[in-house]
Length: 564
Ligand code: FES
Ligand code: MG
Image (cartoon, rainbow, N blue to C red; front, top):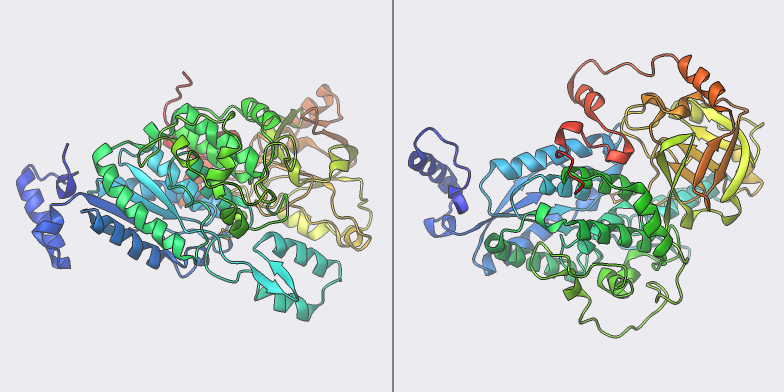
């Protein structure tokens, strides 16, 4: 196999001349022939002043480079885009595929024998795994790790479940202007990703469980010395990977993907992970079987007691043994023979664990947080291709509920009319045109706030439904990812305020109580759903983005389907 700088020579018809040119240019950086003759490990640098979740990337790169060099390799750092949740308008999801494309093509374009992808904030690890799954270069993920918790008047704070909870208290007038300002400075108390079981923590744990990242690297705190030792070890592993040359597609066997689904349910993980996993399946020519995912959810208990479903933060999860400890409780439900990118099998991480010292944060099997998994898949006449609900983070009283629909036509409409005093606590709030194409980018708008007049009366949860996503750090009886979306032919477009809607989580149903003929007539009378953007990435996105059940990937990036 062609290695090192000889990989992927741009051909001018004379390969030797191409190599000569390549060496001449790179020597301008001060590299010796000895350095350039070694296996090359690319390191994707996703540092950005706009991305505090990646604030430790420079130190992680330094540690990873050290590991590469200690193992006899040559590290080459290169930039790729970086996406932070709060600094990626219109939504970070809108940009995820762009990052996946850029990462895939830069890994392919430049000579490297393996690659370390440093990711963290919500969409970055999914983009990198999608890129890696489509690339022939062996890849290992190095998560940036969770931030530290803060403290406010004796109470621990962690981004960003507490952001929402405390903002809701501010809306309900139980926290004043001065105090909310003080809290604002303490919610994100260090660099690193959100410290609850949100999307970033979920995806970091899933790459560990699917063999794409070193044991414990899904949870070690962003600021800990352990995180930097893991970075060094990742560097060493990446050099070894230049020999074994296992591609990400070879690591992500059907067993490994299924292990990801089991782990997601047991974590009480983010609903966003369902979309990202569907995209990863698509990159491998497979379709995520939502019915199978729901069946897994019925067998797998939630074992991790972290916010937003539970009470702890990522630091405690790590101290309790992290992903290897969690996997050790699920050995009968996992396939521990699944391969890992850096060698060995998944079972290697669970075979030599120290004895348990705690049973609260990662529960033993006989004392779960809940007997069944975190996420349920619903279907019905309102969601012909499915919808999801994180029922572990929802009010048990609302799991079976029938109520009057109150329909908002867009996120903007919702913002303007949410304070309508006629909205009652048992109404069902419906948001549409917030899906992959409708918004666009399927914003995390599914967590419709409780109207202020009801919040003041102490109402904490209501049934809410939409074709949007929800932040993994949010909670409530919130039905999400209704597919197809309203802006792309979904029946959600035909719901009217005053209709009755019935949610039945135990029976996995979501139905509009309007008969089929009436629903068909309403659908036929609808105006065209949206205008296509005139140019640029927005147009590419609008033309090619798929629905939530295909992970919102672009159709042309998916592999040809092979469900054998
Ligand atoms: Fe980056 Fe939460 S905002 S992980
Ligand atoms: Mg998030």
